[in-house]
Every structure is written in structure tokens, then in C-alpha cells.
Length: 285
Image 1 (tube, rainbow, N blue to C red):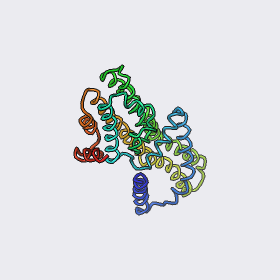
Image 2: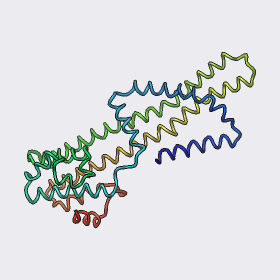
Image 3: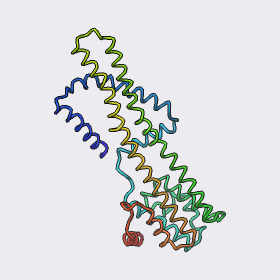
Image 4: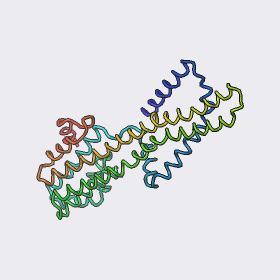
């Protein structure tokens, strides 16, 4: 929603000022379809050639997420920490082997299904169960698991940022494709050099529309999308860091109440519940 609002504000101010200053919007509208096809066609072809299919797929998915609100909230954070508290408390009271069934089949686990927002998030559940499974096996110590977690988070970071980087590269290329469209317009104008000055002026103006559109699309549309996608990716990573910190605190011998406090401190301030809010939520659950 905010993406569309931002675009409308940008377009309204740019073209509004142009019209108020006496600009002929008809020149831009006349050239717009041809220049857009040239710029978008060239940019799309280069984008496909420059990225692997998995990056193209991730980019399409990421662009869809840019037009949706964030799924991360204080309520989700409290549910995540309450889920971790419950499963760590069960392991502490009944032994690690008691959570084996919960880990192996989380979709049938009463604990995971008690918290549907997080329990139905495949990526979060997979991250939790993978490391709980290692804890149950007892073959790795806290330092080894922390190193493995760091490696996975780094891999997740690079993989997720590939889509944002692809859009950022596209933003850098759009002005160049705008120049290509402008040069083609100038070539066309030079082929009509015998025409009256008024006609030549209109042709030159249409050619310059290509440069204008390339810059506008780059810095008014593509670059903001790349920045927004990076922010959403960082939100995903922050939740995984919260899970990591909580599980490691538990492995180091801290009680579940203290372990989830470690995890709470990792969260962004906008999603982080207060100590009393989290305590009340856990007791209620």
C-alpha cells in the first residue's frame, strides 16, 4: 500500500510541476509507449540474461512481498517466544527425549499447533526443529551448534539478498537503457533533418523523453523496491537470530524463562514485547 502511495506522490509532484510550469504533457504522452517498450524490453532482456532462474523466481516472490504489509509484529514475537518457552520447558521437566515426537512431526505436535501463526510458518519451524533435533541427539555442544547456525544464517542472508541485489542492478541499468532510447530517437531525428524546425523540435523532445524515463524508473521505482526488499529480508533474518539466541541460551544451561529473555533482547524495538508483556502472555498460554 505504502509503495503505491509513494509512487503516486512522486509521479504527481514531478509531472504536476512540469505542467504548472507550462510544459506540454502531450509530448511525453505521445512518446511514452515507444520509449517504455524500448526501455522495459531492453532492461527485461538484460535482467533475464543476468540472473539464474532461481534468482528470477526469488525476485518475483520478493516483489510480491513488497506490496504486502509486514508479517512481523509484537504479537508474532510473543507467540514465537511462548512456543520456544513451552518446548524448552517440556524438555527441562521431562527430558530432551520427550520432545522428539514434537520435533519429528511438528504439524501433529500439540505445542506447535498451539501457536498457529509461527507453527504454520515452514521456514521458522524448520529452523527450530533442525536444531532441537541436534540437541536431542546430544552429539554436538553449544559452540558447534552456534557455528553451524551462523553458517546457515549467513547462507540464508546471501541467498535472500540475491533478489534485492538483482533489482538494484536493474535500477543501475535503467538510465543507460533510457540513453539508448534517446540515442535512437536522435538517430531518427537526424534522418528527418529536412523537416521544419517545429517538427524537428518535437522529435528531439520525444527522444529526450527516453533519458527522462530511464532515470525516473531507476530512482523513483526500481531503487526504492530494492531497498524495501532488503528491509523485509532483514526482518526475516532477525526472527531466525531470535530463535538461535534462545536455543543457545538453553543449551548453556539457562532456564526457559531466562532463555526467552535472551531471545527477546535480539528483536527490533518495534516488535520487541516488554518483559511484563511477554511474561503475562506466556502465563496466559
